[in-house]
Image (tube, rainbow, N blue to C red):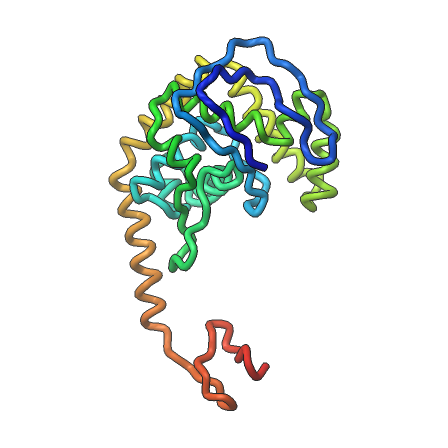
Length: 246
């Protein structure tokens, strides 16, 4: 889905009904937050896994981390001060929210910024928190939770996304955490600023992690022996099976 936001105050009121008409609107009572960018395109990218990344403040730092060059999951993890596997969770969560995408043709999994991610990377903490709130307002699962449909979210995580009951509950916790964190603009701003401070402190080492990872992958690709099909004599792909003959 794609939604435009302008510089008017953006209160946390879901706009429209999500696909399938299952998510009702539910106004929020707290004050709106001014967006400082002319527009941001919110696009939920379901090609990424259902998120398992509860700390929205850390997700908000991912675009800046990627822009600086720590653009692999392990680089994201190093910048956020997390275990390597969590770097993939948080990088992919940013992808799910339409802030980053996978860089095509990279020797290892690497992220690159979308336009929305670029806006976040360039924003100060107040603007970054406001933009994250605008993004989370458009997440279908969060909108459903705000309408009181928690069981419906669990059911759809199982039926539509193929998750087991235990995994679905964990993913539900992520959406509930995002909803809680965007309930208070001031607290979210403080958390976003603190996460950015952590990322800034770790950024130099994190960039080196990503650079080293990419270089190692490139060397392995160069060192891989070239093999050819015995029938058509075309170079074989990494699978070892000829796409023409097999």
